[in-house]
Image (cartoon, rainbow, N blue to C red; front, side, top):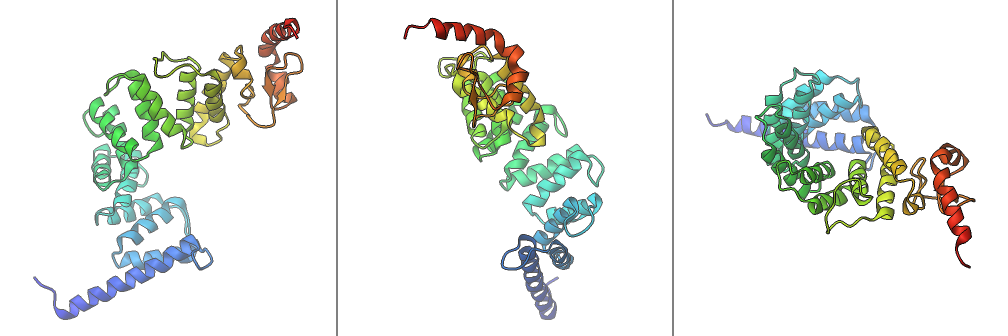
Length: 314
């Protein structure tokens, strides 16, 4: 049934009002041209969301999920994400998929999570593509399919998703869902590592120091590998805690190599303001604490390198 002229005018007025209200809320949220105020921003988001504004509904969901401008409430966050997602807003579709997958504010439903991930991925959200890759690889919400998982990882990786690039590197190293190709593994790890992904820095560093079987296209480079391991070891982000410990372990495994101990402090991975070992003049440490901690590991090589230095012709 067509709208009457009066109803059409009311709908247009509401749309303009919702957009103006949302725009002011967004400025308050980001601090653009006005002082940042999460509480006031949330009130504007709610007013626009009640008028059916999809972006406002998504931002209100974010406010509830993060506790910005109001108390954190996962159920309300999921409610507003769903309203926005069902209007076709891609970011809300991804956020709702995350909540359905993890059971945040809603019952766990992997099948529904995959459905919303797919809707978001079809609109170019590469985080959703990455998550679809994980769902297919693990068989959660869909039938397990390594090839389809690799396809989604590849789509996300080509859009610059560092997590997908890191995972795709492991797929090429193992040949899971793709043809085994160490050179391609190194290429994807490098792209991810350049974005600061500590997992990729760990993997590429381990490859370059010889921890993985390589090929002619990826020659061993101890110094470059040590630098990457050091970067991973210095990462303080909580999600990379395991990578940090593994990087330190890898540095210790190669503490008998001059190029490694000369590139960073093997105790913590530091690369700046390092002090040379006075005995061998080769290993470098960030300070006395790491030097004392690493001395049981370093002393054997230290004596050997010191003797070689003393015996070297002047």
